[in-house]
Length: 519
Image (cartoon, rainbow, N blue to C red; front, side, top):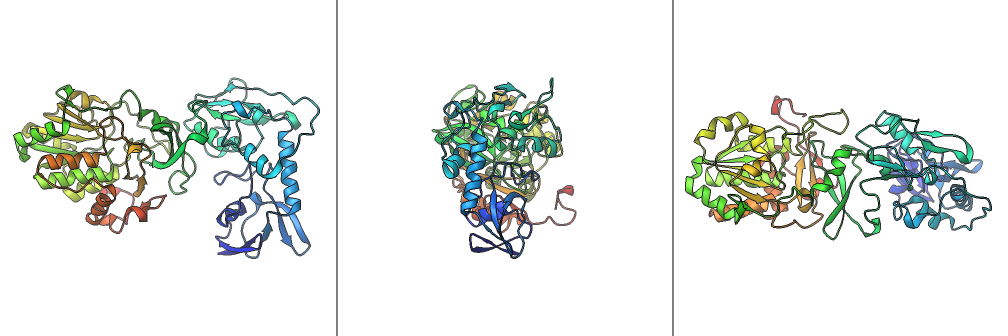
């Protein structure tokens, strides 16, 4: 560890830590525009200027280009530093349009925040501001307002270093410099929303969220994207039960600071037209749990199959596995994607497996002795009731299924074919965990209450068990996860507290186990 001093306070950080990050660990904010922890160093905004103590006396340097080393000492609150920051802010605001009331970035704009913290100067400008291009449609997800740009070059570096598409460039010189694209070009990748995330001002804004809600009204809740098996960490932004956007949440081991556009836009599913809000029995409103319990009692456990879901949470799968054990019913699991899923893996974040919990489901299936898709197909002629947990089983198997009971959050060919449909909560509406393709168990937190009659799937299974005269005790996700972690060897020792905000890797798999899954 390297010992550094920040404003006379000594701390220890890993050698090579960027000093902006080191100061943050010490509780000191060094203002910055161009620096980003997952992009290269540009050093062009100068807002992060600090004083470095040297034998020749204090020297002004930029913190973003400075790495922690033993004996390094900086000051962030000296008079010279304050004057530099004020001058930088004055320079940036000379030609900046004063359109904060109508700017979509208002409330999360660093230009606003830093003006209040480090500038508060009166304008000395007497000439007309330089006009630049406004409201440019540069991609499917992004609009550009060049007048608001502070030339931090984050978006340029993102295109060069992350997507390797390089569409955006800094053009012209002096006070006519602006971000732009060559004529006829448009953004053409699946990570456009990140440009709005990293823009520190209102130059790049997301079409999907533009003018939807002022950010100071929104609450943020930690969640996990369920669009594929990568399991990107996200912040769910919501107000009064309505979800307005997903933002990537930093996790250096999973998604860094990024997420794909298809995953970002999944927030529309929460209150979308395809949501299931009421139970159905034979196509009519009814008590789905009572009807499912009656069907199971009528045919007997040997003719009942319970199918774990690769889209369902660890807790829901555990509850269903325990129900199967209590009833003596057959247990299966089916891997694969639903119809229409683009089986695309881009080598970055988008994975071909569009299920968030394939590995977690597989572990529980193996621990419970569940059969696979082929075993389920072979058993169908002997079955009278098949309960599918949060998966489009009809599409995955490609055939009709007898006595189908569907637990689902949205409509699908399976819900349309099912005799009994029971609505379950969307991931943003429940506390649960998912195990991503790395073998990282990650906690998803409830942001909003379930819509309609939906409830978390583990609670629905618990109610179904009660209707069948069995007690599972899976109403509470914390208790449910603790029980499954004790039963599954690779999860031993895990609980919600140990998972933390970034999740926890599973214990290594035994040799030759899990068919080549990452150890």
